[in-house]
Image (tube, rainbow, N blue to C red; front, side):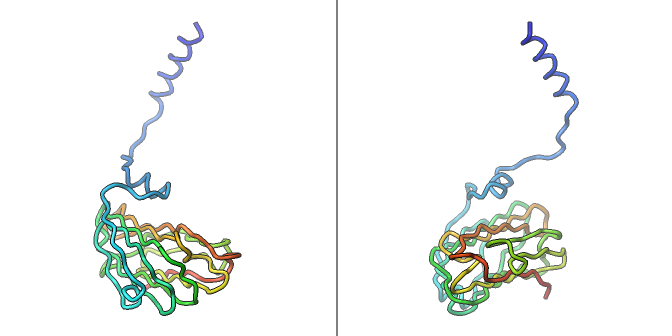
Length: 184
């Protein structure tokens, strides 16, 4: 008897909820922090990042950037569903800036709260929909981001705009460094 009542209750509940969005595998990957299927992995050296690279669509960059000099990364065009990952495969253990720049005409989605390390004010910023540059500053002793396994994940859910998540592996306290969105 109890199970019939439960089934009838579930039928009523099911009729009262409606979800208006489609959830894609890449949405889940972005939220949960794993690499979705269909990405190509490319290895880049410290010298490549120092000289500046442009990431291709749907790519994972395994980067050996060690932060002895500033690094530059240009994102591909923000087309719907495009998904790119920049991942550290060695420690960025000196102080330098790693600058991510959107392709011409693209921006970071507005109102994204980005935080890394211990969450100190110096390691957090909020994006504006007019921002097209993200600068991550590493530090040699207590870096908030940049150790092996740290990653920056970019996902386009709306044409022309990148959403970003940082997966941080800090060094020691993780209290030093900075990140900042800006517009060129």
